[in-house]
Image (tube, rainbow over all chains, first blue to last red; front, side):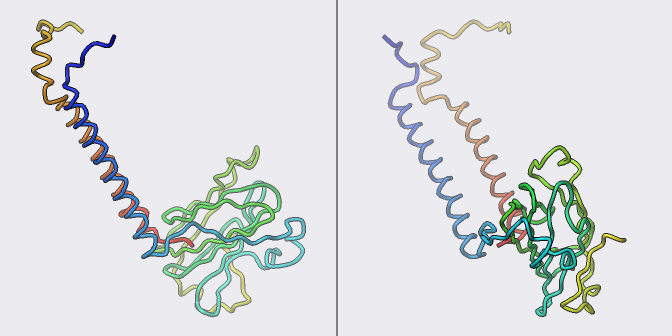
Length: 185
Length: 54
């Protein structure tokens, strides 16, 4: 037979009830914050589902080598096309304009890679056979490291490249057919 | 750990706990409140300013 508790049972029940209400209130507050900001700010995970033939992506389509890098769209935004492969990104230095909507489109010809950008919420997997697409905007210029963060093989630790955020004026005179990167710099 | 004070008697313990373990509850409440404040701070000062990705 259990020993009688030092704390009266009514106190135990009252304390547990209050704790439960406090936890439910916090849970409700967090859910409310997520739902309200999610709806108001149109926040959602990057959810592009687009397939591509990973065996021929280097021969035809938008991921041929001459089309990789940063392209300026007619509306002034930028589209960056990158191929992630063991064990590098192509191009392995990316230049994007500051305070401009940037759309990243990535794919992989071999295994699953990761794509993560500092100071943004960009964080996605690059899966062979699919095109990953994420949109963001950089608030300040600078150079950032852009690592692969999905283990992709023995050389994974060396799969890191650079992202340069530069003044938008540098892209002002680019035509929509030009592709830029900072590989040679 | 050696404690100089004698163990409380059952009557003293009962008297101290008649309203529940207030001290433990206070510490727990502070810890949970800090966690909750930390969650809010990360959400509003880090996650939201970084912008949507879509």
